[in-house]
Image 1 (cartoon, helix red, strand yellow):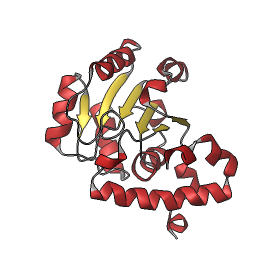
Image 2 (cartoon, one colour; image 1 turned 180 degrees about the horizontal axis):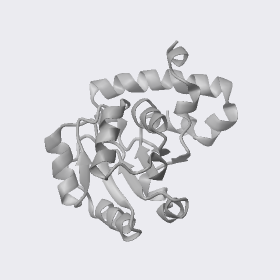
Image 3 (cartoon, helix red, strand yellow; image 1 turned 90 degrees about the horizontal axis):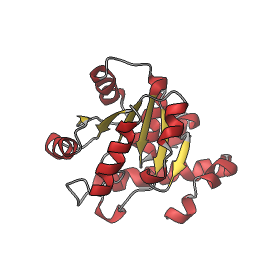
Length: 186
């Protein structure tokens, strides 16, 4: 039923990786990407963590060393997103309301309104990150959620809807679905 209202093309990420650490940021730079928008919860840290690890700090510094501009974009509250982002010296957007365009537009405005084709969005949810990023025209990478047990009730609801969409993809485009290794995630 959900698929009737949503176009299938919006659920096709450009890449799937198990974790953010598997992403080849040099490749993204070579492809013309200049801006990296990263979801916070369950992409960089789990919901029950508050501070970036040394590994996360090193990754963000590696991305910045490639002259890629990093923005944390999250649906979470200002206090959580600001605290985390300040620790890694990154710009941020809180209460982004993904998959709606308003948060993405705020992020683009923060950067001087670059061409959306120069943006890579990285996240763990198909119904917020992939859908929203693809509708904006971003290059989208989906990663596995870090820790589903700590997710909030509304994220768990999203996961149920996401499962229906992914089951539809499994039926209509098995080759694409298999590339996502989703059977391993469930």
